[in-house]
Structures are given as C-alpha cells and as structure tokens.
Amino acid sequence: MPELWSTGFYPKPLEKFSDQNGDKTRNFLAKLANKYHINIIGGTVIIQADDSFYNRCFAVNRQGDLIAEYDKIHLFSMSGENEVFKAGNEIPIFDIDDTKVSIAVCYDIRFPELIRAVSLNDISILFLPAAWPLKRLKHWQILTRARAIENQIFIVAANSFGYSAIIDPWGEVLAEAEPGEKIITLDINLEICTDIKGIMNVFADRHKFKIKNKNIDIDEMK
Image (tube, rainbow, N blue to C red):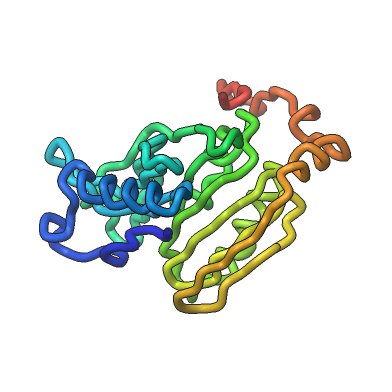
C-alpha cells in the first residue's frame, strides 16, 4: 500500500488521525495477511508513540506476524513534514519467503546513499510506499529506475497519486499503473538479480576513496 494510505498526506491535527502505538494498523494488517495468506508491506500510517509522531510502515508475513517496521528517515521539509513528524534512524533488512528485502518511503528515493547502503546487504527487492505528486512525475519515474539500475535490485513502488510500478534490475518497467487507484500484479524472476551481477557486477568494482583536500573517508557505507 502507499504512503499514509489511511489518511492522505498529511491531515492536521495529527492527534486526531494518529494510531496510538500502531496497534489498530498492526491488527488490521495481521488479520488481512492471515485471512488471505499473503505477505503485506503495509504502506505507512501516522503513529503516535512516546509523545512523538512517526510516518511508519509495518510489514507482516502470511501468518500475520509482524516481521519489520520502518519509520521514514528523510522527511519532506517543503511540506513541513519534518516539523510534525520525528525521523527514523534505522532501516530494516528482512526476509519474505526466503527473499531478502528492504523498505524505503517516498522522499527517501532522492537519497542514493540510503538505498546503496541496504543494497550492499544483498537485498533483491526494495519496497517503496509513496505519496509522490504528479507534478514531479518525471522525477518519480527517473529516480525509481535509477535506484533499480545502480543497485541491481527490483523496485516495487506503490504511489497514492498513481504510476505505481514494478521495475527490474535493468531499469525496465515491468508493470505500471495509470493515475488513480489500481492494483498491479506481476510474477517476477528473482534470478535476474544473480544474472545481472554475473554480467556486470558493479559491487565487485567498488573502491574506497577520499575526497581530495578533505578529511573525509568515504567507506563501504555498511
């Protein structure tokens, strides 16, 4: 599901629309996953916890067990998101049906160092809930494809304004929705992740380096 699917991005005051500790959302997703025996990346919702608000994503497995959660790290200052939400500082890497995956949210896609960091841990799929406006549609399409290509991973992006997409490690758009609500489905071949690294393994060719005249060491970002 997309970013803030239960409220839109984002209603005020947050207190009126928030889920205390995420209890209602987790229970809803758990029942849905267990009923239909599916894994769910549950978009994001407004969570209130410890006197703060978070833009949080829950992931549950086919049995309805919570297997990961993620608080959006990069908050969109142009909309004032950073003034009302507290940023996360950890990004999960976890398994879905024996496939290693991770989650980022919307604005995170503009920060390639974040996506590279999780990709260095050999993920195959990055799930990307978003509320990306259509006036910046080209950015959405270019950035999602770029992150897939440079990290040699699948990007599965669900956007509340439309143009949700499934993109393979070559940057090919395998499925894309139109504007508005739509469900897209696709069987993907995860062996592509292995095959592409056999042809062009950019990770094997990476090198540590320093910025000249600066006391900064750009390391492996793990």
